[in-house]
Amino acid sequence: MTELIAKLYPGSEIVQRTGGQLSTVYEVRRTDADPLIVKQYAPEWRWKQAKEVHVYGLLSGQDVPQVVQVGDGYTVLTKLDGVPLSEAEPPDWRASYEQIGRLLRRIHCIGQPSYGYLTDEILDPLPDNDQYMRRQFTKKLTEFQGLKGDPALHRRIREYVETHAELFKANLAPALCHNDFHEGNVLVDPETWRVTGFIDVENAIAADPLLDLAKTMSYSIRGDATKLQGVVDGYGDLPEDWRERTTLYRLYHSLELWDWFASIGNADPLDSIADDMAEIVS
Image (cartoon, rainbow, N blue to C red):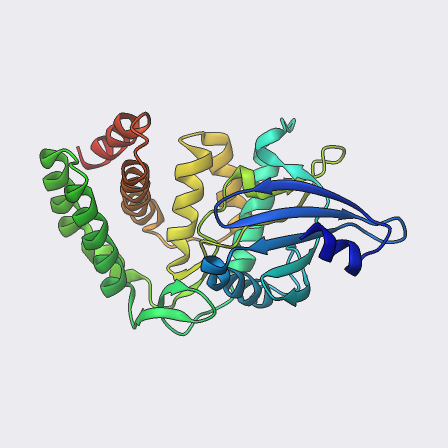
């Protein structure tokens, strides 16, 4: 891949940044222009490449990398300035999360035709949030059971979902959801503490915007009142039931995360995640 990049951008410094399961990422440092990012995808993950290009297209005009070129197994993107918020310590977390709230609101203004998982289309689309979230909980509870999760907790989660399922019907319009909007994917300028943008759209879905907000609450805010107030202030008007709905959605995200760690044999975080779920359904 480095030979191809050198041909595309002669005289540039090529630095490999990561090499994961889905893609290998290179930074192209050019002497006469802004740096670029090149992502190389293995053949089995080309559908992820198509998804990334599609979602960044939906987000055109937002504070995200712009697609420069799409090749056979690689995508060239502009490089955003800034460092991940997870690696920084802003002097005012509330102000940072107000900016995050505004970004989320802008993403959620991009409507979608149905509910479901996004690639370069919506897979197995469903017409309403009630059907979609019931399907998702059923799928994740089945996985939880198959992965030998605690039967008593399984029963309590199932009962909690049934008791609160009317909340699903409150959302009437699917929106583009980043579905991984945590501090590791938000970039900031450490000089001014301005949020410069966000990255990593590989988990994007079409869903209730509060499902997206709930994931930020689960993965980054984690009960921090200052951060929560900031994101709520930045986001703007929320429905009256937002606390109840995001609680139900946080349960879903924890269940999904438990299933993921169990499926890859990482047992270390399972008890902590199970405790989070048990606290919600208690």
